[in-house]
Amino acid sequence: MMDIILIVLSIICLLTGFLGCVLPALPGPPVSYVGLLLLHFTDRVQFSTSQLLVWLGLVALSLLLDYLIPMWGSKYSGGTKWGSWGAFAGSIIGLFFLPYGLLLGPFLGAMIGELLGDKGLSVALKSGIGSLLGFLFGTILKVILCAYFIVVFFTSLW
Image (cartoon, rainbow, N blue to C red; front, top):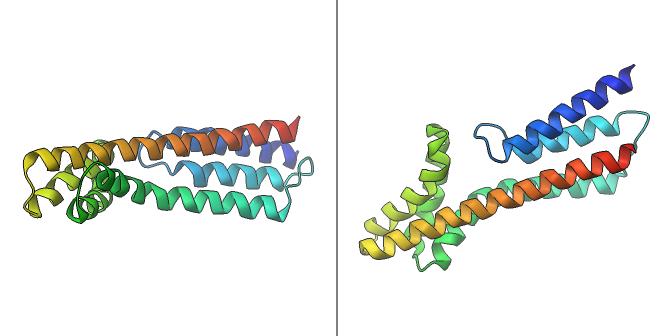
């Protein structure tokens, strides 16, 4: 009976985590990882310590990249360090203005950073777009990680 409860909770965590990749306020990969941990505590599936640690590392990396990728997007689209740091600050500040802050935060932060660094509107706009594209790329990476966790769940269980 306890295994059934853990498996159901695991499915809920995996689906919630997957949705959390695109919905604000839900930390996607960490919640999906909890789903795999719950499955691990059943009698039906036992993951190795190495698997659990690698997956935990991937989750930590995804959380870190969530903040860094918009900065890199700004930088590689022609922005300066002002735009990169603006994108980082915008990502943090955007969390307080959900759901639109998640998209607009890095974009506006990069633009404002470039404008504060005495760059023109054209450079600021390119930096903002690069930051936004970086954010979208990070979201795709999180979706891939959570989808992988779902595949691991089903292949382990059946």
